[in-house]
Length: 341
Image (tube, rainbow, N blue to C red):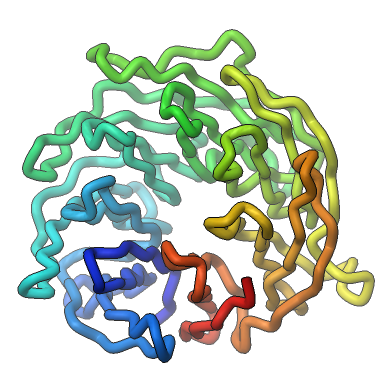
């Protein structure tokens, strides 16, 4: 079993951790729910769900009642998004429904702050789709599907567009989509009250360094800065953000000098207090790069932490910022780290 993602949410005094996986068999468990002891940092399994194939990326609804998963990931001529209801009282996870992802290999999901819209990114065809959500967590058929074709300078990895994430702005009025294949961060205005909410932004994209392969993207808690990690270039770019536009501040490498020729960036998160940024490195390094965030939004390298496994694809912080949970795909394990604030 290869763990692919962890996601955390706080319910009153209880913190639950959701793990997706590449299970390669619908008869085996695909999604796992654990409870986190926020004093000791210990994980205890409380529930799981089968009947879905390769639920490799997860996202929670703003109210914490519904879990959405990219399903049939890395499955040729397939791809779907699925919905589950989570009952924290009974500690159960119940399948609701699925819709086609609008492209092969869905890799990322995000939910609008209103809880009324779901957006997924499809890697292989370089597309994203927009779905209305019912009040009961049901995913309705997609109302929009945007596909891109252009690639970039690396013929082996960038023969065409590859959307790798979909992230709403702090006010949820813009949507940003790192395109690994085209070396762009695409931007759409998101008018949530319209029947087709995504409209191409006035500045339709921000170009990144050629061959860098932008992958995951996050905003600072203050809403003034944004950060993008590269899969291919081994760096994080910092941006000033205002009214749907990104302006470059800095590009800084996530890997140490020792591993400068064997790295692969994957995930990126900021501590709840906005003081530190964390970025995961795969390849030989298999660690979390730690950066302190300066007042002007730029980053300063603070150190590295081994993930104690191979290929840390995703990680997450709990809402208090006390703990980080890291998942390692190749070694198929997860570790809880206590964070020094």
